[in-house]
Image 1 (cartoon, rainbow, N blue to C red):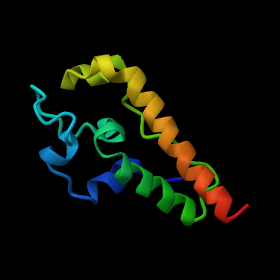
Image 2: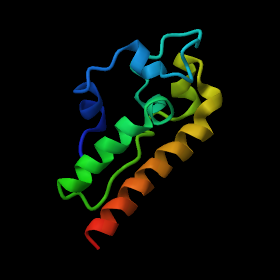
Image 3: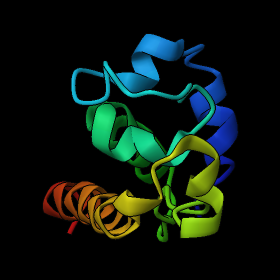
Image 4: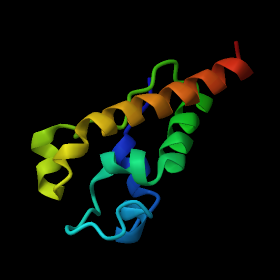
Length: 105
């Protein structure tokens, strides 16, 4: 099973601009620390982390959606994105798993 997603994200030393990406560049609130939002603003980073866990031998990976609830996202004003966050997190995990399965059936 995979490990600490938050730690893997913190190791990237992402700044406010990284959390915003192009889509949220003009968002009215700070977004740094909203790790779940990275599935929308930096999906390639999340995919790389999923892939790293799979390459390390994980047979099960979790989605990066632990705080993708309306209550948690309210802190960032992104509560309206909850469905999209959950779908994107699952899609990226599925893509990583499918890619690994193709390499190691």
